[in-house]
Length: 233
Image (cartoon, rainbow, N blue to C red):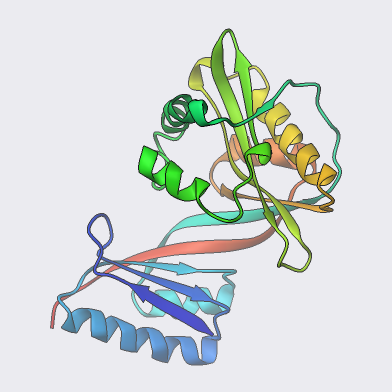
């Protein structure tokens, strides 16, 4: 079992706990110790992420006083899927400003994605996995209308091609661009030799989930977020 604690953090939750490959028989003991440590360090708001949650792991979290508030689905599909004739092009250095404007408008509601800065973008572009050829942009009416940013995971079993971030500028909503951009991204990943597509989506984003189902995605597992407040001891 891997349980990590981050904090104290500067904004939002004061502490973040992430559980990977949780074992219910030992998780309760480990989380109890972590919560006691947080209390001795001043307490505060705590976020808990349980990767690949199940009923037993959910019971452990709720028994310790955590409230579930967010489900993130990982969805997968076999590649290739039906393609698209949408014209896309790779990301270039001078697209940064337009990308950030579209991203932040499209994700104004999102707790992590909606306030991306130039520094955040530069940090991601410096990652070894970044490939501008897989960062696909669609222009319309002389503007950036939407994008599909892909990511390859060659060290997983099976290797996965991820739709990492996808968005359409709200000015161009309702024109089917989300579906077409998703298909364009999946076509790029299939051309790179990957046979399984993957993405993450908020479970309550019903329009997006319906779109992904139509393309061929099904839910693979759920990552669940919880929250609580720990008093200082």
